[in-house]
Image (tube, rainbow, N blue to C red; front, side, top):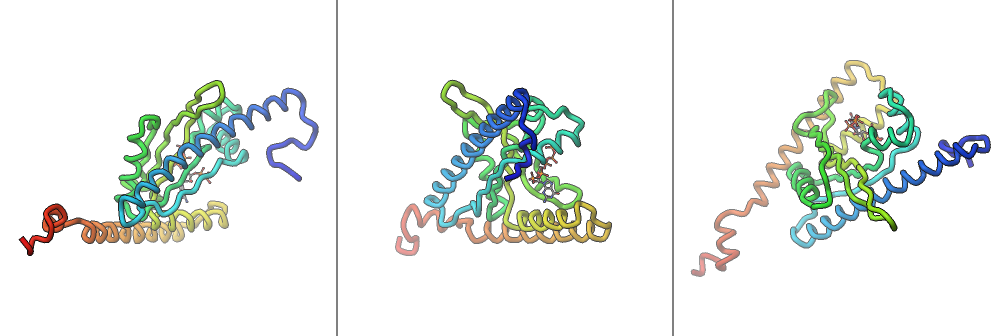
Length: 232
Ligand code: 0O2
């Protein structure tokens, strides 16, 4: 079966060594991805016990494909080597957490970044500062340790946090982009941006509703501690 990374001819010892180095590095990224996924699953478990709703709607992860890694290095004019890949491509391991409400996104990001083995390398808040096309998400580039038989290695990963509405827009925009190979006319670009704004507006309204419904009143809080006030 054809493999996009394996050469069609028998590899030389040098090529073989590079291939093995690549496979090893990718397995380290996979471990980092699993570490972060576990952290998210632990938080999800805790939230489902603590609250009457789970702020995490879904968790997905993926390893970037070789063609995508090498394409990105080439586009940036960087050397296509393992060292360059590790140094310059920060989203080889990617975890996407889709949350119900906008407040959940920030609450979850805080819960992850508070963990003492998670180091924040870079934060890109495309919710506060959306991309010109309307894309919204919170991106965290983090490093986490992975513990191997004889060493501890720090690996980078990108955590994307977004609401269901942001995910809806990004998934559909990605599909359209793929179909049109990234070439949109001006009217399509403007319409996509309008859709992103409608979706952001919906997120804000739903977030306000959540605050309104879930914000316990002072009476609720007191009666929770002291028993129903009317009986006192
Ligand atoms: P895939 O398929 O997820 O691998 P940098 O890393 O800073 O050099 P980059 O890669 O543009 O620059 O970083 P950024 O802005 O953090 O975006 C990385 C990822 O965010 C993308 O990965 C997408 O997953 C997502 N993303 C960013 N902008 C958009 C957008 O306009 N629309 C959609 N649908 N997704 C977006 P990849 O590598 O492009 O793709």
